[in-house]
Length: 119
Image (cartoon, rainbow, N blue to C red; front, side):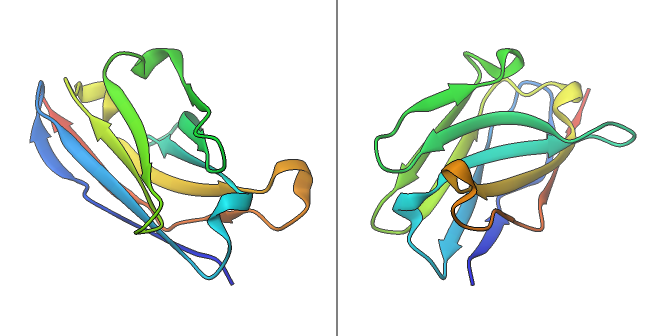
């Protein structure tokens, strides 16, 4: 059973940086596309950034381009989201997702980590 555990959230001021981590266990990470989503209060969950494990293909939502960077560590089986120049509108619960291309395997979500950016 795949498990995803996020960490690194917190309360910061506008303009600060945070680095989120997502630890992957219980499966073969190389078969998944890993992604970060976020959900602000009263809003739908939205895609932030994704990385395909096997070839490092990366995609970002337009609203984070130039501020956020997704990366992975093959040894630690983890992905990261470096968030710079944070804005109050970045306040949300950030979730890690493992998605199986073509639905071959189940998809998984982590429990989320809260990021709060004060103005």
